[in-house]
Image (cartoon, rainbow, N blue to C red):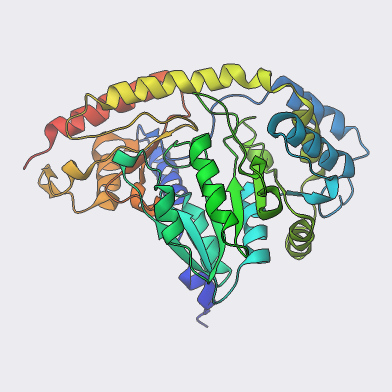
Length: 399
């Protein structure tokens, strides 16, 4: 018999990042030399203290079901971290630990938005935001920006997108895919906008908190009146190079945390118990220990931005955080190589994969048409070779 999947599943698009990563694995299995700049995954080893915490946890007694919202001491450690690093006073009961920040965001969206409601999302945005909002039955409202605006929509443009149906504002800073960082002044202005809409709540994705190259990270909930209106999202994947351990968390108003706990209880229950013991160690660690990895990313940013500036037809800005760059490639569209005309950025991604052996992601998937997302979370020599291949590709384009 033919199996008919649900309308929900049929409506969901596969994340462009995961699709390209899958394609890379297939080509490498065929013996192709592929440089993968598609996934946002640090190539660093996890900190030694995190691995030691995992080894100790294996000795027990952490082998039974954990509480849905996380172990009490882990939630306390997260609350302590938020006070130490972000100036935010949360009770442990306002914290929910989840299986990755992706689940944390999904919990919050399902808890707060639904049919007939809108979620405003500044673009570019993380590829999953839009689909998560659609899965909740709500309508994503995208607010565009350009490279000349440093990929940050002016606050007035965000404000203009808010209607009586708007339930949530969802954004990341530092931003995936652009590496853009909202300044303190911009966040203050945004907080004033939120304050003027009594029913509006904010999901602030701060997973790249520790990867800011100039200045320091500022949590949106730290502005007056915003802690009561904000779901702060964070996790271990980026700063601690623990992507595979799948730990994320939120800190939120008590009613929101309770709702997220209810939602999570019907999906995964509590996050992996061993990974939670690692979380405890990471939250208690001195953030200064993360400086060497941040310095690596800053050096790589400079290497990539300088290299891309010499690629004919590309335009690029200088991101202030995360580990991505989002060059404008519109000058390459409509041109041809080996008789093949590049029809759009999705076609360009596949052409680069076939002709240059470089895997990147279509910026349109992140709400940034005419761009490609490159992750520089990999070794310097791979980045240098990838830039060389891109330059050679650009020099071969005809038309």
